[in-house]
Image (cartoon, rainbow, N blue to C red; front, side, top):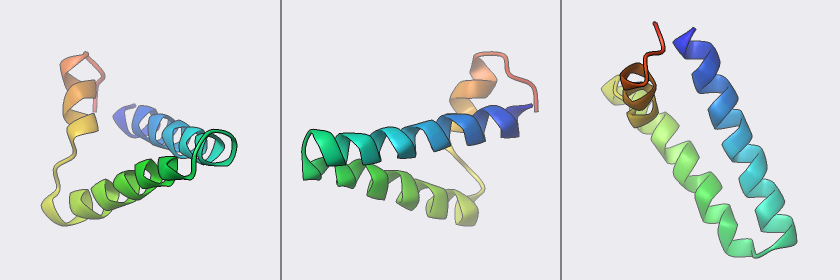
Length: 61
């Protein structure tokens, strides 16, 4: 269940940042870069802040 929530939230954040980049300001693209870097970092360290937050909110693995 955690994996499902994680994918939905990250997907929503990427789409939101692209929409904000197109309609508000191109600097919102840095938010997309931030998300990508965090995904790469979590692949190597096996730790992700979003997963920790979701677990503290009671989402089961």
